[in-house]
Length: 183
Image: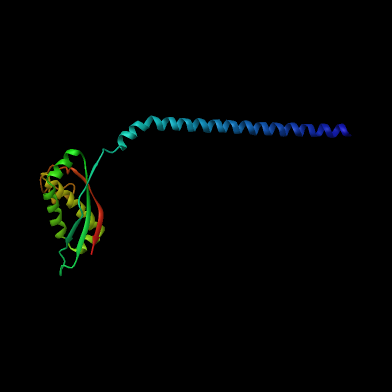
């Protein structure tokens, strides 16, 4: 009797052994396939990396902080004022030199612009964004760029009422506010 039980368990042990071996082999094959896929994706990403780096690398900007502006606003009663810190983002150093030589004219243009605003104009996000664009125009005008506030607005596409005017490029890339207080 003892020989019958030994022969009956032997096929079970060998079939379990085969099942475990098959599972391990399947796991190894899946792991190898996953590793190969990961390696190929990494190689593909590296081959496109130089092109992406060329497109995403921004040019070096130059930031020129201006002294804070404290200006009475054009409200009835004259009780409101604004304290605004402005930093100009420029494309290159030649513009920075031009701005520094024309700094009194630039500050005057910005002071007059802010003084023409009402409190309500400066409390909304849209009002602040408009002021930033207008300061960029005033800064460009101070260094002799022929640009106006009208250049900020774009005409609707497809209108043939006026001849197409070549848009003047503003050398002031952006106007950043470092302080913005309206009281």
